[in-house]
Image (cartoon, rainbow, N blue to C red):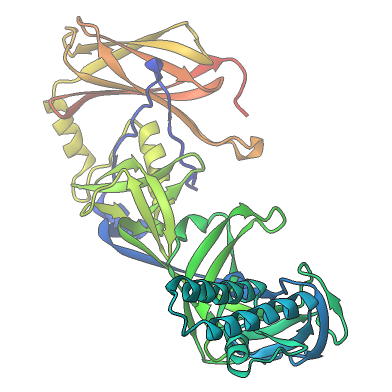
Amino acid sequence: MLALVLTLAAPIAHGADSQLAPIRITPERRQLIGLKFATVMRKDVSDRLETTGNIEADERLQGYVQTRFAGWIEQVFANSTYQYVHRGQPLFTIYSPDLVSTENEYLLALDARKRVSDSPVGDVTTDASSLVDSAAERLKLWGVSPREIARLERERTVRHAVEIDSPMSGYVVERNALPNMYVQPDTRLFTITDLSKVWIYAAVFQDEIGKVHPDDPATVTVDAYPGTNFDGRVDFIQPQIDPMTRTVRVRCEFNNPKGQLLPGMFAHVALDLPMGEQTVIPDTAVLRTGRHNVAFINRGDGYLTPAEIELGQHVGDEFIVLKGLAPGQQIVSSANFLIDSESQLQAAAGAFVPPPPGVSANAVGQAAEAVPQASIDFTSDPNPLVRGHNKVVVTLRDSKGAPISGAQVTVSFYMAAMSAMGMAAMRAQGAAVDQRNGTYTADIELPSGGTWSLTITASKGGDTIATKQVDVSASGSMAM
């Protein structure tokens, strides 16, 4: 049974990560494991996030009603909570000695202006008008409505109690005004809320909040109105995560002209999240190993090259790719685990590929005899190998014993997974450096002691000229 664990090569000396080796799979093998390909695409990406939320009043459309003077309330017209009032509608009447005194001053100023209106002295007329304007301004500062000031000028009488009008339209959500109640300027008499717009706070998990941005479209449905969608937008993302639910409150703004969305309602929220043009691949094309994400690129002629990639958001059944792939490339979209197992087996066997059907073993042998063979010898420092740093020295000679220089030599150590011990498969690999006279050296870090399968492969001019595979032991503790 093939192991289904991908392991990356251990880092070689100088701190660089070793590259993963290509894999060759015959057409027959592809068909057997159900290999399929997909194309890396560049396209506009959008996601849809569905969650829940609660409806609340828009805080920007709330207001308080307070007086700017002390006095006694006489009549209350807005006498019930959640009563709807219009802007300019009388809410209550109040008697205030200070207000009555200011209204009398206004009437006296009006009379004085009338008496001097025919005066030939221009300064007198101007001063009288200034007194009227000053008294009217004081009334406005007291919060007296323009309607009451106009009545004073028209009727020239001071009322015992003055009507106080609503400063805005909306629902009375809090009422503290009662008849015969003495009030001060700090007494909050009414709280009025305009529900023509409402807020809905949607709960978005922390791993998805990166997709959400202000002004993203939002759609809401409530159980009270089946089949009715309410359209709005994301207004604000709170910079705080709820430690209990690990969610972020995302505030969405909705128009509510008919008043169907009521504060306290539970709502189903769908956020449409445009993410612009992105490079995407199917999520089945990604082999996730915990620390690394790998895709297999189709290079043609049966060769698949593992490539480490950096992933962005998971959108539907696709991943956004940030690094590692280019649009137009063909990648494996199925059987990735089997491909990885094939990679491990071929690495352990020195990248051996069986002959295609129809070619006999004798023919392969005859072809091999026609090609000059090379021999591989190796030693290590320290000897025997140890867990940690090792230098592998490879000697490459042709069939006549002459040293071969200018070859590409790869040294690969492989240890199979041990499920009973909870240990994954491991590989350490490096390219040997040509030291001339047929000698090549590679610095290898072995992550564990134990028995390793060592494969040394030498190639020149694109052809493999020698392969050696042996089991070797490394002293030191086992990696757990």
